Length: 377
Ligand code: T4K
Image 1 (cartoon, rainbow, N blue to C red):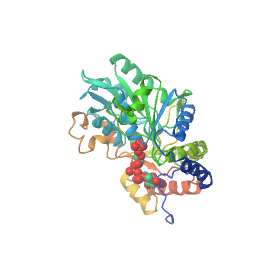
Image 2 (image 1 turned 120 degrees about the vertical axis):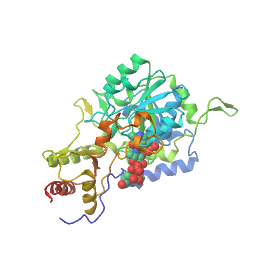
Image 3 (image 1 turned 180 degrees about the horizontal axis):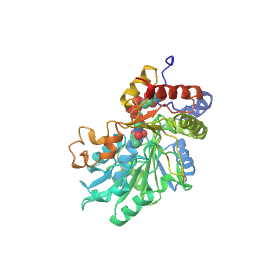
Image 4 (image 1 turned 120 degrees about the horizontal axis):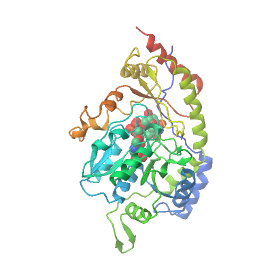
């Protein structure tokens, strides 16, 4: 089989047309109001509330600053422990540590690769203040079980929803669970504003707190009431976000077709497992991960390299896992004994190229390369 002429990357962002963007840029430039809670920013927040089906939305310049702010807004005791998953992007534990809180890693469950609720309670100590689960790859966590544990132990729950834009559980917007949910609008996400993110929350009491923290704690020209940060989204980001809100549903539909083609091609391949989302969930189609089991002919790393020879650039999200990172590997909860499933899956998972523009022929060819690898000597 010939290699692809052009590199096939793991994702491709949706981008609005210049024809649609130019008049909006002209408007922003004419008004000369380019950041600090502008007109487009406020409009974007309102549209997001409808789309995410949530009560409150605060947009940010990126998802990481949003997550930092979420933890800060909940006034968790300094030095307290936040239980999280190692199977995530670095931003998740970093947001905990930057708040002078201590991440405690809990293992994941093998299908959805989200935090395993049955293992959370054994991580709880007198010093635990919160749980920070991640809806990884677009697979929602077991929100009911997590909610019960949090209530029983009086813990806050902050969801990292970077991968679940527009997902629903039994028709309820996923941003309604826990105290706060963070969404990322980075270019690599299903929905993007180039960089950006937001927090969703039902408690109206958090609105002013989050607003102030996002803007240095400033509430008036001569009054600073909190130790805030600069988390403001500018008008150009908001304009791109608004235009992309009209495009993401179509992208999602196209991705569902790509997903179907992959499943059709790979469902009977021995040694390849395709993680499944629960039936009551609307998928956000963020990534298409497969798990290369021990009975596949070659390892995940060998498959990754073989696909690369054909110009197909898959990603090992998430390898290494956060508990392997220099600042975290010293933690007691980072031991392999504590995280057997995450440590097993980190060597087996591979995210295949996944975006709406990917046509069926390309998907078929990628799958052929994978299938051939299984029979290769
Ligand atoms: N929590 C979780 C669970 C997250 O996954 C993330 C972000 C966050 C929190 C933090 O949210 P943000 O602060 O980012 O809003 C990427 C993204 O930079 C990062 O946003 C994302 N997670 C993470 C999973 O992936 P890299 O280092 O893998 O990105 P990069 O530059 O290698 O790009 C990946 C692929 O995307 C490229 O192969 C091609 C494509 N791409 C990328 C960019 C930037 C494009 O086609 N166009 C582009 O402009 O981190």
